[in-house]
Length: 354
Image (cartoon, rainbow, N blue to C red; front, side):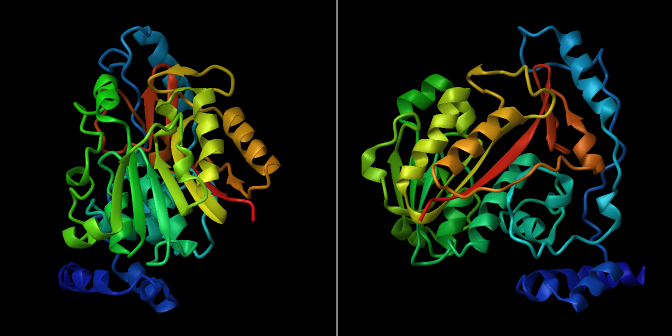
């Protein structure tokens, strides 16, 4: 009871401290004494209900799709309850990685979760993607007033405003409105049509936002040469899986490197098929990249002289074994069902050849 009372008054002050101070040995001891009361509990993954669950594609046989997802879940063996230990400090730099509960619970990722005005402990892969991108850039010194960044398909994501709040100058791009309308992005509120969409969470002063951000329309399948060689960093958040095919997505990753200065950084997240390294969705509105596709991207980038390392850890926490079925509840949402596949997010960090 006393701890709860102390926590009620101390927690707001704790969150005001710089991240560096909250990662000392003394701070780790404090976290053990007063674990967050707002951390979301994740229990043993629920058994998939074949009768009542839905599917997100009416052309796919419901029972076959859900049986395939259930088979994946039955093979998953959770080995760690990350909720029972304080968040890891994560002193090592991020490498390219698969979305996991372990990364999501680190202090860095939880800091960015709060900074983006989401709730602490929310196990959602979209929040993981945003935290992954911003932490990777922060570690590499990219969020500074002397840096110029390029965002692809920024939609209504909070990253543009967050980067501007750190002083970085940004060129934010999205589809032409007509094309976005045809693809359904406008109706689903995922398309950015100017400044009104990119600061919905009020992460940046409006005057600073207009001073630091330039908004353009752009086609990711045909990147303008006007953007080549100008940027210290670039990013895309779950965007290149929507370019029509696996090959279009791969080519975007390669072509985007032309936009960077030597030594600059590209950070991307995309859909990752955990169920199969053979079958997948290879064309259409949303494609699913397999391990073999990601390996091909990595090999191609390395052959061009770029630097990229990959951590293939798929996670062993309870949230890693939970599969959110369509229509998605969006609560524990690190893994979800798309057609007959279990899908998550994967993040790529690439440094351009010097």
